[in-house]
Structure formats: structure tokens, C-alpha cells
Image 1 (spheres, rainbow, N blue to C red):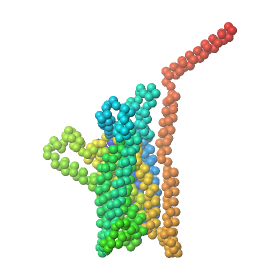
Image 2: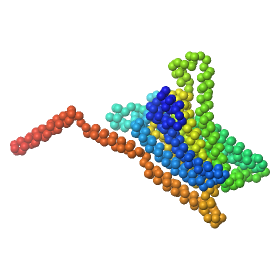
Image 3: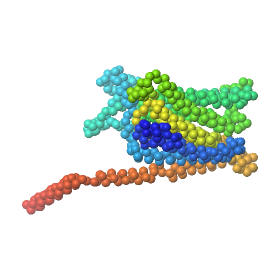
Image 4: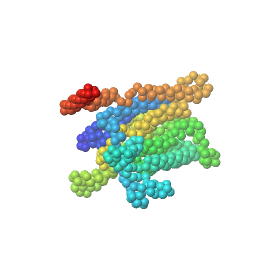
Length: 566
């Protein structure tokens, strides 16, 4: 660990993490996270340099809605595709070097899964008898109290549980019993937990609608409330997002355990997918409203203003682009500050506890170091970090035209994030167990989804809220159906960007050529080794062939004698 302190934890922020050494000490999962965030941060730096162009033009023209911001939005979509293709190659490289290409096929069962199966089995047997088989209980009992957990002879695979056929005597003698949980029950639990997540999303939509209606209600008083209303609503929305994120961090974790996933990879993939879907609505809902709904003079149902008229929302001066930019800036900056607070506050608490040690023995000694390590919080995995980064990736890509400088802001915050995460895992948390991994799991699917959505969202923002490239058309077009021409131009630009993304994906192979070459060499070596015989094996082969020839000659001779006798 002392070596990692110098080369990673306390090294300069621009230093590349020693991924191989991190893997040796903490496992593939944590090493892949730091390899990913290092590559992502480097790409943010490149995009941030491009973002300086629309930012400078915004300052010079005193207008954030300019053609340079529009062009930057589509550049960010292509940038996302290039980054994802680069990471795919990095993943294949690490899989080959670390020999983890078949990790998920050979992954062991989660200790929590095995423990829960045993508990459920004992509970059912305590009620119905240890020697009672599921078929022995009545039909009605099997409906409301089935035996969903047991030991069965077979093996778990990605496709599910593969039982051993009783007629196969060879497998029956050598395959052991493993913990089994009924797969239909697991699917039903997943459906129920997903429905509960949908209920929470509906609650978020309801509260967000109330917050937006409150903003319009305050603005209906006129005067200073016209400018104060959006500020109050934005701050209330930030607070609500943080509260719901905290609630889901507890509820979502419990629901995912209740679903009974058999491996750590399956558990994390399910948790990340549901959590990102929840956080996607929680984080982006009001921003989507400003970008795509507010500009059409939306009327809130049920809600009335202080004069009794229906609440009708519209952008100040019919300029939704500035309102969208303000919203994105507020959420991006507060989101980064909240992430730092989540790391700095525990560090300060632990530092204060260290100062409060009363005796020298409490501060020094191997025994007391072990005791201090045991009192720290347990590091459960990198899924929370991935989700935070995925939400940030969405801000950078999906709303690039509204806040181009967001990529540069996130670059500098991520430089500190790499350091703070390293300190958190190695200094503030109990040393984690060795986490194995084949790749970053469902996070890759989440990032690819965001990359595709970025083309759609930036195009819609330009069509509904922006007039950045209206001046590119002749004056006659601007006066007659300007939105139609903007729509045509936006659709064409969107298709060009999608075609460019597909070309990038096709032209950059997922597997580096040198990895393909090494795999081919390994395959050739294995083929040679299969056919390579030792001297002793060759002598046995020759002896066997000689005996076969002698036996054949003997049979032929016996046949000729019989013919002669006849």
C-alpha cells in the first residue's frame, strides 16, 4: 500500500493511475473503474478545449444561443461515440492481460444468495418438516407457501439453473448439490420491485409538477417574483433531487437484495440499471420540461393563480434557451459540489476522531491500526460512483448546446474526483475484498443509451428553443415558416451525426489488432500442444500400432488356412 500511496493516492492529479498495481491490490472491478474514469476525464479535457470556442463567442456576442453552441452539441455526440469505442478496446485489452474473458461464466455464487437460500429452506422445513417434499403438501399450500429455496444437483449458468438428469449416472456421481432459488419467483420479485420503482418515478413527476406550478404561481404576483420564482423553484428542485436520491439509495438497495441475484455481477447490473432509470427521471425531468414543454405555453391542469385563472407557463420573453442554460448550470454545479461534500465530510469526521485519541497507544501500533480499520465503513462496490459519472455524462452530452462549458467544469472536478475516490477507498473505508470483474457491466449499456439520446435531445433543443442558425437561411425563409426550415435543417443535421457515429463505431474495431494476434497465437499453441507427443507416448503409440499389425496378419493367416482346408 505504501507504494500505491506514492504512485497513485498522493501522486499528482495528472498522473495516470497504475492500473496493474491497483488490480493486484484491490481487484479487477476497482481497477477497471479507475481506468475508466481516467480515460473519461482525459476525453473531457479534449472536449473542454473545443467548448472554449462557443463559450468565447457567447461572451463576445453576449448571447448563449449562437451557431457555435449548436455545432458543439453535435460534436459532443460524435465525441461520446469515439470515447465509448476507445473504452471497448481498453476493456478487451484488460480482459486479455488479466485472463478474465470467461469470468462471468465461472463466477461463484454470492454469499448473501447462499445465506438467504439456506434461511428460506430452514424456514419452510421448520413449518412443514425437514423430510417433507414439496409434492407432499396440499395443492392450496403449494400456492401460497411453495418451497422456493432448496439444494439441487446441477450448476448455475448465465441462462439459469441447469439440473443434472437422474439418468446420467456419470454426472450424478460427480456433480455436487448447490443452492437453488426458484427462477420464476426471482422474476416475479424483479417485476414487483420494478413496479415500485415506477411508483416512485410517478411520485417524482407529481412533486416536480407541483414545483413548476409553484414557480408560475409566484411569478403571477409580478414585480420581483418574476425573477425570484425560477430561483426558488430551482433551489427547491435541487433539494428534492437530493432527498429522493437518498431515499432510493436505501430502498433500491433493499429491493435489489430481495430479488435474489445469484452473483455479484448480476446484482450490480440490476441495481445500476434500475438506479440509473430512477436517477434519470429524478435528475433530468425539470430540465426536459424547460427544454421541450415550457416553450409551447403549457397550461397546468387543476392549478390556478392568485386571481383564479389557470396557470399558464411560458419562458420569460419567450426565450427558453436562456432558462434552460440557467437550469443546466445550476444542476451541474450543485451536483459537483454535493459529490465533493459526500467525500470531504466523512474525511473530516475521521480526521477529528484521530485528533481526539487520548493516548499514544490509541494512535500507534499494528493492533490499533487493525482496530481502526475494523471501525471504518465497508466499501460495497463501485456502482454508486458509476451512476454519478453516468448522470454527469448525460449533462455533458444531452444538454451540450445549453452549457458547452460543462465539459470543462466536469474535467476539473473529475481530476479531483479521481484523487478523492482513491483516498476514500484506501484511507476512509475498510480495505475492500478482492472484487473480480470482466467489464463495467450494464454501465456500458447506460452510456451507449445516453450517447444516442444526446443526438435527439440536442436536436430538439435547437428546434424548439434555439434560433442559432436561423440566419443561415434567406430572409424570405425567415419570414415565412421559419420553424419548418429549422426543423428540416435539424433533421438533416441529426441524420448526419447519427451516420457519423455509426461510421466511427464500424471503423474502430472493438478488439485491438495485437489482442487478436495474441489470441490466434494462443490458439495455435494449444493446437500444437494437443498434437505434441512425448517420447514415451510415441513409443507406446508405435508399440500399439505394431501389435495391431501383428494381430491383423495373424487373422489373415488363419483365414487362408481355413480356405485351404475347405
